Structures are given as structure tokens and as C-alpha cells.
Amino acid sequence: MEEPALLAATVLLVRDGAEGLEVWVQERVSTMPDYPGMTVFPGGRVDDRDVGEDSQVWSGRSVGDTAQTLGTTDSAAQGLVFAAVRELFEETGTLLAVHPNGATVGDASPYHEDRLALESHRLSLTEVLSSNNLRVHTDLLRPWARWIGSSEQGRRFDTFSFLAVHPVGQEADDTSSEADSAGWFSPRLLIEGWRHGLVRLVIPTWAQLMRLSRCETVEQAVAEAEASDMTPVHGAPRHDPRYREFYTTTFHERI
Image (cartoon, rainbow, N blue to C red):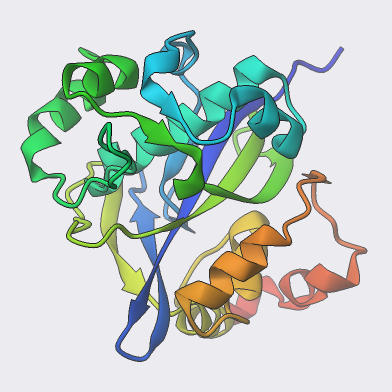
């Protein structure tokens, strides 16, 4: 009997750049157990401590409504939202949280000591939010896509991707130990890099970049997210015409 897939969350962090829409990506270090050397969005597995019942650090749409949109249980929905916020903060220093008055955090630097505690598992996200009188807000994470598949190491993941607009006043950084390099790039530039063998992508990342490349601005990306279908894509959809380019680009054409 096949074991259940591990829940995971990734975040497409976007902003309006000088020449159009940009998304934050990172190239994973070669020693990572899953997807080494691949260019990916920030994200990771749902941790047991991402799932709890502290409603004081949750705002926006209810957990139940969020679960209905994602097609999951309430517990899974809460875990996915918290994992998305936690992983993004750990890997980029970007904190998707709001103050009690609903204002989005504009400067995350005062919380970077807690970021280190999150990374070392000394604190949970709930503890970080509670101690700083902050909360997550579902409006900051827009459901984008869902893929279920296995890494090259054979671990199965049920990965939910969210679109997030980079908060004004915050600065993303590339200090994560999980990445060799990271930064803001045009989705179209990343796809062109893949076509020329300069960027390594797995099919879910490729598909999401292709979709994002149709957007010129953050406003268009948000509108695209509102139309998202969260029906999961399973495995390697080789016969789906939407992904034909990925599977017909032969290996020797790429690095």
C-alpha cells in the first residue's frame, strides 16, 4: 500500500520590477536530499508544529473556508498556510504577517533573531507570532497550484503553491543555507534560461513559471491566481499538451 504523500508548501513571491514582473527563486545546494541543484521557489514540508489550534495568530478567511478552497481538511489547510509563511521567512527573510490593526509587516528585520530560532527549531511559527503580537492573514497567500509527485529520491509530496506579493518595505535576502544562489528574476528569463540549458527545473516549477510568464505585472498575477484550479496534477503528465515542451526538450540540449 502506497504511503500518503508528504504535505508541502511553496511560495511564488512576486514584485513589479523595473522591466516587469519578477519572482524570487533559489538554486538548491547540491547536498540537499530532494531536488539538489534545481531552481525552485521557497518552500518545504509541513512541520508537525505548523499544525495547531491557536486562533489568535490566524486572520482573514476562516480555516474552514481556506480548507474548502484548497480541497483539504482544516488541519491540513492550517498547516499549509503556516508552513508557507514559515518557510518563506526562514529562506528569504520575508515575513507575511500583519499587526493587530491589520497592517502588513513593513520591516521584518526586528524579527530576524526569531528567524534563526525558527530555522533551528527552537521556536515554532505560532510562538514567534504570539510573542510579537502578529498573525498570519490568508489574503497574503493566494492559492496557485497543487502537484502530487515524487522526487528523484522517491519521496512523494503533495505540494500546494501560493502566490504572495512582496510586502512594501521588506527586503528578501539570499542567506539561506539551502541555496547556492537566489534572487529576483523575470519568469520569462528563467524559462529562456531553461531552454538554453542554463536553469534546471522540475516539471511543477516549469509549469508554474510558464503560467506566471503570461503576466506583465503583479496585478495581473493576482488576477491569474484568483482563477486558480486547485485540482491536483499527478505524477509526470507527459501526455498533457500543456507540458509537451518540457518533455520533448531532450536531455542533451540542457546542462
